[in-house]
Image (tube, rainbow, N blue to C red; front, top):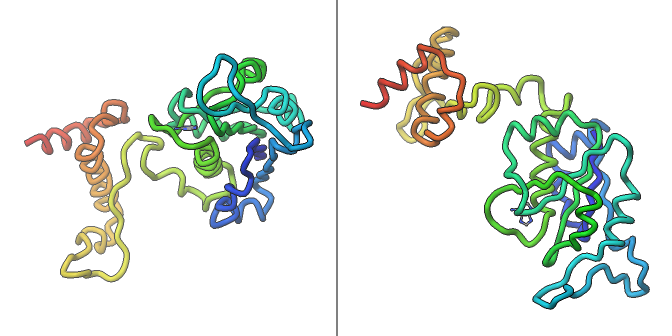
Length: 238
Ligand code: ADE
């Protein structure tokens, strides 16, 4: 999968060369191309922004510069995303949907924003990473690259994207434990040491239900629940 990221601050994307995403780019499973919008300025001072018509604070990215940067990477099968607090909030099902594309172009705003005409012309899907305002779209773009890449075949060890919070059955993940068997007087739950796979699976399911019930009742309504699950949830109410 290829990402083209249009930004004024390519240096901000250094974290993507670390860890799992870094390895996937070295292995050519992912390609992350940083496009510096400033390179498309026609001005000898490399100016990319200007004051808003009608007055007001801050500077806006100029439409022609953004348009040229976009045209330098777009192809027939590209999906274009503009990171903005005005967008629809990113969630796991959107992440999974985006992972099906071969080519994503991510447009990062900075300063006060971007001239509306070039947004209208490009007509990107607008995505926010939450109801708060950041200084630019770079951190949101990294969030999107990281979350989407996890679904790209070969990026994770097989299966690790399946049994986790928010995917598939819509429950949060059950708690996990590793060695030592006792830490600060606290023991690993007995069932996990039993080697009894059926009991372990049942315990994990119930703990996933318990965690979701305690932390995120709001997502329980959309979760895929069996009769057994509902019975267990009922027992938590008392
Ligand atoms: N740019 C600034 N804040 C943002 C947010 N919350 N999501 C996406 N892009 C942004």
